[in-house]
Amino acid sequence: MDMKEKVSGIIAALKEDYPDPKCALHYKKDYELMIAVRLSAQCTDERVNKITPALFAAYPTLESIAAADVSHIEALVHSCGFYKHKARDIVLACQMLLSQHGGKVPGTMAELLALPGVGRKTANLLLGDLYGVPGSVVCDTHCIRITNLLGLAQGKEPEKVERQLRQILPPEESSDFCHRIVLHGRAVCVARKPKCGECSLATYCDYVNGK
Image 1 (cartoon, helix red, strand yellow):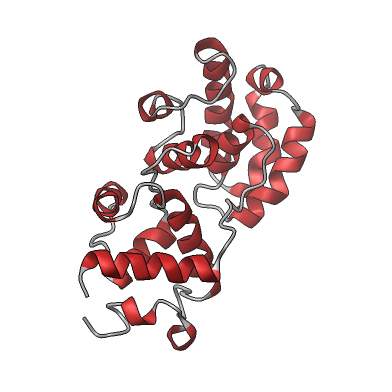
Image 2 (cartoon, rainbow, N blue to C red; image 1 turned 180 degrees about the horizontal axis):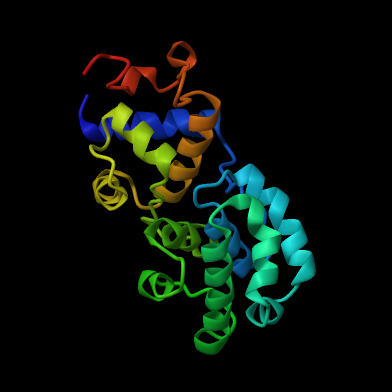
């Protein structure tokens, strides 16, 4: 089969397995998702979801976080690792949202990348989840690993994998595709012990088929 057929088949199988592909991070406001994604770097979504309720209870508004003592934010997010960098970035980013963006998470890649602690992975997730921007490709470790196994991309550099996936994924499907790949990586294509025998993508997988 050609690449277009392969991609179509993979998307169809993922849709059947994961019909409701939502971000695993819990949030109610746009800036809360920005903060949660920053905390998720080198940390599990499960851990972040345990941290954020206390953080958002202590600082219930964007203004309160922007005015917070960084050391207190550090204490609240300590268990997610790299807490000093994350706390600083969170406060500075919230200050920029107020001073430059009217208190809203901006909706363009360039504006998002200018925020402290926001890289392309975070920006793509925010664009896809908050604004439904077509072509938003979130290249996290699951996405990079599994798309390499499937033969949809080559290499481990996030930006290179993102560019490859942008060329083959239908733009309107890309954000949900990435969420579904994360769910698949947690449930079936587990890094240390993939369950190839029960994988709905086995037909399309270069790793399974020895390519």
